[in-house]
Length: 363
Image (cartoon, one colour):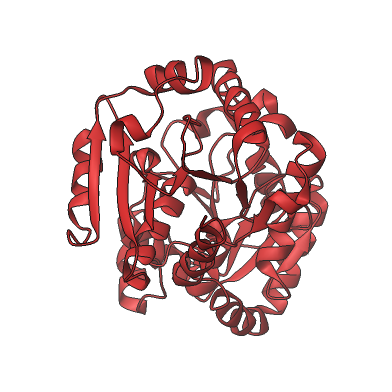
């Protein structure tokens, strides 16, 4: 069987990037029988795609990297729906599209839907993104043979919002960033010094996007009013200017994976009270670093966290504050359960189940 996979999204450094890279890496590790064609397009970052593809075993994998911009890909495949993907990559049996375009294909068509945030929280997206996604999802509904949802919560959204029958959807969980693991106390101290963090701290990885709930995290931290307990906010620099930041809050700016692992490993509690997520990869990364987790009781977060986190109402700063206090009092128990919960998810497991999905479409 020849399997084509669109890897275009790996250049963006998002959760979808992590999914694409993790899935492809482990498909090529576990599957010794099938042939793969890695397909990708980027006007400015072809080198990133090429370097990723070059790591793959040449005897079972080849790559076709082009210079199609996202705008041109949207025009050709979502708007006009012309140029079958086989014209670019040759004959294949299964094609796994990205979350940006849905090209026409003679092969069996698979796609992954990570979330439907454009419908749940449209105010958090540029209109351009919403338009592209709606065009793509209309084609997914019409043409895809199998849709992978990354959680039961996302599957329910696909059925209720898009009206796609549940029998066309298969839930396959993804994983966290498996490069982020528990570090030594020395590495944590070095990272704290690097970012100017003194004493005990809570940590949140957030952007200014409203559904990430940063303002309520800040309010909950203030409500605890524990002497010297810092709040460390990891994210791109600049977004903190529009928030009411307290004196016990540290803004790190961008943090590389190595430093993030060290900062997570040293945190008392990891805060992730998002309003909506298709999966929530960072919950697992935090658990793998041995930190107690507070997350939301809505959408996919309870699925990912299981019984290894404190679940809170993300729409209430008071509930988040109570959750922090509970996590602090149950820290050892939550850390122990978190290690076990994180082990339930892996990119290898994701790849094996995805390969099974491909094989179910074998004609």
